[in-house]
Amino acid sequence: MPTTPAAPTESGPEPLDRLPGRQPDAAELARTAARRAGDLLAPPAPVRLGDVVPAPERVHPDPAADFTLTADAAIRVVPAGRDVAEQLAEWLRPATGYPLPVTDAPDADGPLVLTLSDATLTATGPAGGLGDEGYRLDVTGSGVRITAATPAGLFHGAQTLRQLLPAAIDSAAPVAERWAVPGGSVVDRPRFPYRGAMLDVARHFFPVEDVLRVVDHLARYKLNHLHLHLTDDQGWRIAVDSWPRLAEVGGATEVGGGPGGSYTQADYRRIVAYAARRHVTVVPEIDLPGHTNAALVAYPELAPGKIPPPPYTGTEVGFSYVDPADERTYAFVADVVGEVAALTPGPWLHLGGDEAFKVPADTYRAFVERAQTLVAATGKTVVGWHQLAPAGHVDGRVLQWWGTNGDDPETAEAVRRGARLILSPGNRVYLDMKYAADTPIGHDWAGLIDVHRAYDWDPGTHLTGVPAEAVLGVEAPLWTESVTTLAEVEFMLFPRLPAVAELGWSPRSTHDWAGFRERLAGHGPRWTAAGITFHPSPDVPWPAAPTIPTQRTGDTTADTH
Image (cartoon, rainbow, N blue to C red; front, side, top):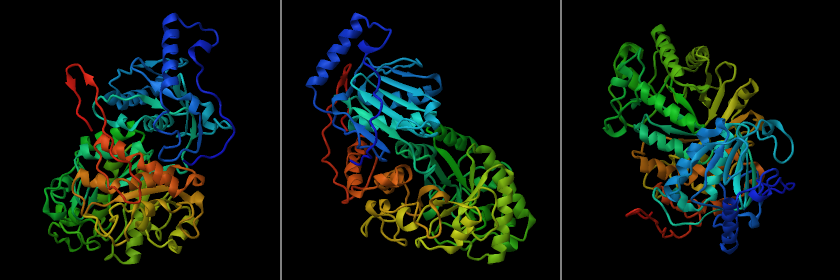
């Protein structure tokens, strides 16, 4: 359990009988006495305070201060944090069977309290300087308090609390369990501001509900960006009102000849809103100038020579591109990025830009420079694969590096000209790579990536000539040429996604493979309880699957998990 020594932290909420200026009534005293008597006889909490993934910045256990959540508990919260409290209640109600009402009580104490404090944003000392995503969590025998400067920080703290409860908390049905939380305090904040994953919905289409479940997986591990690869040779997945055939025709194919599909603008808004509630920003990608066969099928006038190509359902790359010599192409780009930008409240718009093998270098550079300007005109910041590096810089530009060799002078030069980087090394975090040679799905062109390999690198020092301050964060892409179902998506995400999440969130000082694999092992039962498919990596000492007893609710006994 990695911990970082630090000065003693402040104590958590005072017991009810010690609050100044308040005299508890007899019922409160009786409940407090009964709870303390029960805690004296109860075994320690089954989860340790430091068993969190990603590893918190500082952990201060207090084994004498374990807290047990009881059926009469309520969640008290400042009004600005109410939505986080409602989500916390939604996570905890199914397995506990407790009502867990949420009440606005800014200054109240109680079993579960969420507070917002501007002082935590910039203050110094062990409780301060948490920024806009950090939080402090205090657990005492009488309650749990989460403090943050913003709702995002409260949300991350609530996710930590969720992990500190027994694994059965992820059951969808009531479970007979002592809902104990280990005592002590956690002070936590992210290392990098950008922490994400990419889902390729172009090679194989995934319906809205599947995308929402992926959002939940990201949020569980404090990842805060979902990059959606919306367009490629095999399918165009987002409706564009000014070019309707893109979705109607270009969306009707996918790898292997399946039916494909596309998102209406209402579908896309639903994904964006669902993600935003979970403090995840959607990053849409419109891949240009290559990877455009589906668009050319829909609108042949965009193709060089104006010859319509046949629909493509294979997996080769690099053969298609829009006509860079035709002004109609730039009208198309302006319309598409304009509509997608208007649907996307986040600051980013991804232009793709890789594997345009048939476009001459000078022509490619001129196209990218013009396309970047069109994106900037929408008010969004340009993101693109690192092949954009030779093109002229625009303010704020972000390059997503997916190479396999950490020595890349061209990308380093783009950084010197002002670019920032998202690190997605293909041989470390491409989650479509096989775990081992016998993995039934996936690829191996970048190598085999087991969970150890996904974890054992440092984004801050990975690229030669690129300082850590130029690294915006990390992202784990999942390409779907061979991935066809939600279960297969989850199989490729878990257990590597939490490894990448820890690289993005945790301080480098906590990086320790031996400790990580032990902490990660405890998440296997959680995924099983939640119905999440995962690869049982031999790198990880998974515990034997426990039998989870269920509690009777009315005349119905819940299913076991």
